[in-house]
Picture: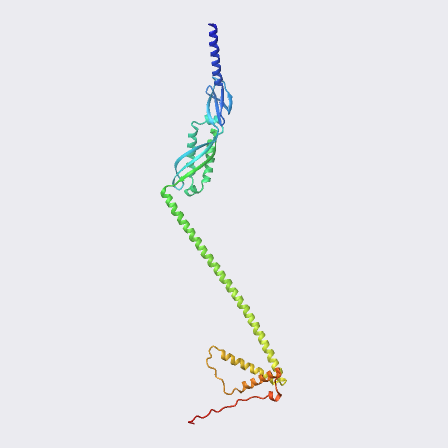
Length: 330
């Protein structure tokens, strides 16, 4: 009987030891923190790993997830500063930094964060106009992050990001915005087209101006060259006249005959080549031209060595007037 009672006592002691060991040794997984309560009062926080507590005195209070978590903010109606009603939803990212504060400073942490974020979304978006609301999402996100993070700091929570997912204006407002955008784009297109037309006209006018300047410079250069040519021609004619005058003063009649014949021939050429000349009347007594031609012939004979004596050279061939014959009835 004594041995049997001893066996029962050992079994009881082993059982109590197992229970004692099981209640005193705790394993905390990575990414979590456990709070320890002694007689219902918070005493410490257990970090990840194998931890020991006082059995039957201490107990695990809250098991807090210390990793970054995602919180979905439901859609809500927001009235902007210019009285436009829009539907907006968001998403928030948060992380527990202090397990004790997150466990004992607020009840139902996720519900508190959702309501905090929704309230601040209405406050921030309600203070802006619709155009600013649609075009400044980054500014809205920054303001929301700052406000919500400051409000959640006493709870041991760090708000890492707050992002607006969607802003949905009413259908009629969307259609109105579409028409406004279309009108604005058409206005810009017309402005660009007008500016293009103006620039092309300016460039065309500048081109015509430059062309006119170049043409004027060309005409000026041509006029200078023509004047220079006429000046040289006049100098040549003056020199020729001087030489002829010198030859006449020295008694050389061949030079005067050549000069007169040349001018006479040039005059006849101008008369014959005129555009308004149809019929040219020549005088019957053309003895002066023939005499000049005779002088030219004498000069040519003298130059090429085929001339006779001076007496033959100075002869002038006179035309013989012919009397028309009388008909049978004269």
